[in-house]
Amino acid sequence: HSMSVYRRFSHFVRLHNALAALLPGVALPPLPEKAYAGRFNTDFVEARRGELDRYMRKLVAHPVVRYTEALMFFLSCEDDMVK
Image (tube, rainbow, N blue to C red; front, side, top):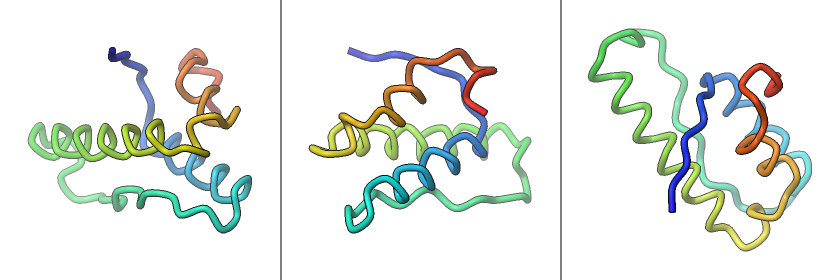
């Protein structure tokens, strides 16, 4: 089962920070590093997409994180509501 949502890197940063605040002491998977050089390069974009896909798969597989409202909202809301 898979789904697609469109998010900016900054949305992932906000999600990660929200989860860290909601779940102090819970080991979250590391968020991929922010990069500036080459960010519009097709290879970079595809590599980043893969990194973020793996990050999300780890979040939804996590026994605690997967049930948080923050993650459910991130995955289900309209793109312009993520802010």
